[in-house]
Image (cartoon, rainbow, N blue to C red; front, side, top):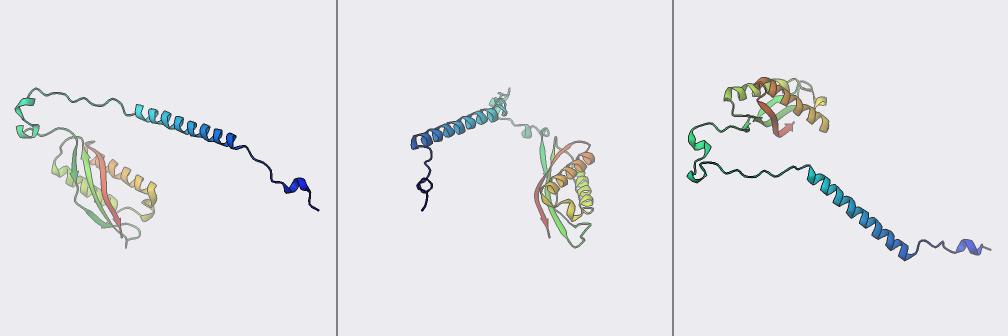
Length: 164
């Protein structure tokens, strides 16, 4: 015969205790979300306030005065299509842009384009595999562009990278 005590199912916590734990856990989740939202909101910093210009009523813009507009400039590079060093039957097409701190000459952009082309020809497939390979490639391209431009190229923006 079976033992009667073993046949009876064990009772778990009551329904009231389960609901109380659900409310406590929900409150903790809401509190953690509120605290992390406040922490992330602090990192944004103050919002910029628009400043009125002296000639705001005249409708004159800096581009209309004939002076070059100072500030960051994005210049697209011509598409780079070449084969890799190893394996040599793999081709790479790279479309990118250069972010300058101020407007630069087209000769500098051409020099950066040729330097990046020469660099890509030396790459091996295992160097650019995966997310970390992409990050290393982008860092190397940015370093070469900054060296070639004398520090004026701040970033390389990769629009398309295709390997075939």
